[in-house]
Image (tube, rainbow, N blue to C red; front, top):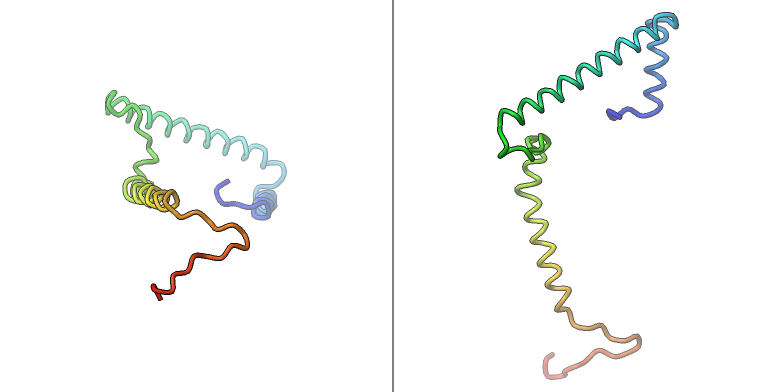
Length: 112
């Protein structure tokens, strides 16, 4: 949750009780909850408006794809990883069979 651990959450709660007092804290929590709900609703409405304005061609648009980090990963790194996996699977498919335990490997005195 936002990169906040349990210890930080406890510290924030203690500071909130000290700053706002135990009487005003429930009212502040309700106000913060309403604000968070309104922000989420605004973001959802903005996403829906964007999808409606772009039209049906972009109905499957994922806004996370517009993040530069995700864009680079999806369009540059994923194809490379797929190719590396396919190449490594090619090598594993053509690898020579393993020797049984205790068997001596083949030896050619003329090759050394």
